[in-house]
Length: 328
Image 1 (cartoon, rainbow, N blue to C red):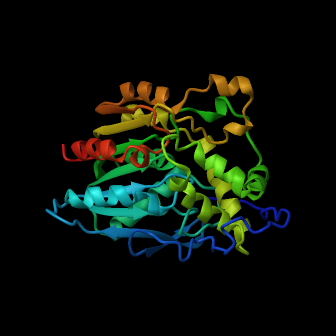
Image 2: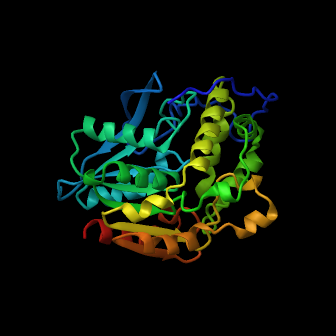
């Protein structure tokens, strides 16, 4: 992968966010996770990097199977607490990586791609001596799961895709943006504007339920290294924008559980689209309803009134659907 030249925009001085005045490192150092965090050394684009991950053993009836949970773009590993517990209790070994460029992992200045992230994750599976695995990807992690399954179909037993992005080719609706524009947008967030951004993912949850996502993100703005965080975020948005994975669905041989909330209106970089383009772009729910017909062995599950993260908004139903699928 070729490194991207240039430095992140410094931006104007940032006042301490209300209620989040303590700086947090861009590796989320000290931010609580559901379990111990380990690191896998990798080389990416000629740079030495570290991939953070958690590794959980089953809590009952070990079935010899492993499942990897692949996070979304704006979500740290803490939001997997429920699925970790559900799956461990069902006998699974549960591996929870943070992708390079995100959360507790390294954030190099690189031309990111889903293929590179997929190969990193396969390297993690190899390092942990995993054989065939199930992938559970949410949002951006759903697109990554599809890319992994297309690269190594013999390694993947099942796919769970929770409100995955990449069902739509965003290039058909949103004009391309300079990376520096996206970096500047990361610097421009205030507590209020970022809270509003996060809130649209969760129509069924009270504000205090998703406030931790606001807290850690806004605390990182006080880090002396926030420029690097902002650039990694911008570069991964570029990856999402230019790499739709919908064309890969028809080639996937494994069973796939595809879910979507009926009120999921998520679309990366949608703020740069015209009003007409926003109206014309299919949402995740209708796009998923169509995409399931392209799968060889797909199951679509709709979550009425849920937004972008049904496993947090409707946990009991999501748990039942998830365990029914992965045990089948």
